Amino acid sequence: ADESSGYESESAVGERAVVAGGTLGRQRRARTAFTSEQVCRLEKTFQRQKYLGASERRKLAAALQLSDMQIKTWFQNRRMKLKRQI
Image 1 (cartoon, rainbow, N blue to C red):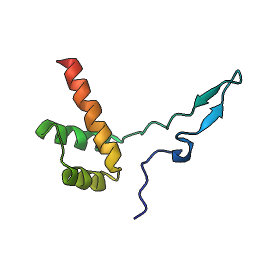
Image 2 (image 1 turned 135 degrees about the horizontal axis):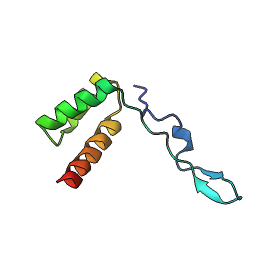
Image 3 (image 1 turned 60 degrees about the vertical axis):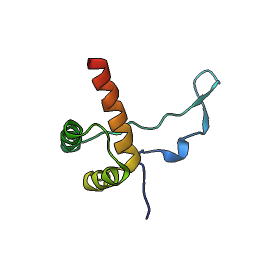
Image 4 (image 1 turned 90 degrees about the horizontal axis):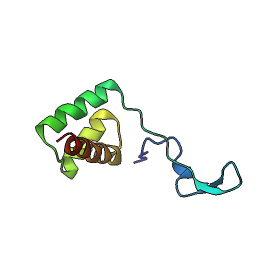
């Protein structure tokens, strides 16, 4: 199965690039733009359970056409947001 992380420039990860001023710097991955439908489904799932098991994560990723890693990262970030709010 040919899976993609959803990032525009996977090949740039870990590579060095020359930036203004001639210094070396890392290129960053493009930020994932979630659709409003994806965010809504993620939020609803998060309200029911704060942590997803691997099989639940894979099912949700397939349903939302996202990668397993994107779901995992979204949930990690969402838990940190909740922690900051509390």
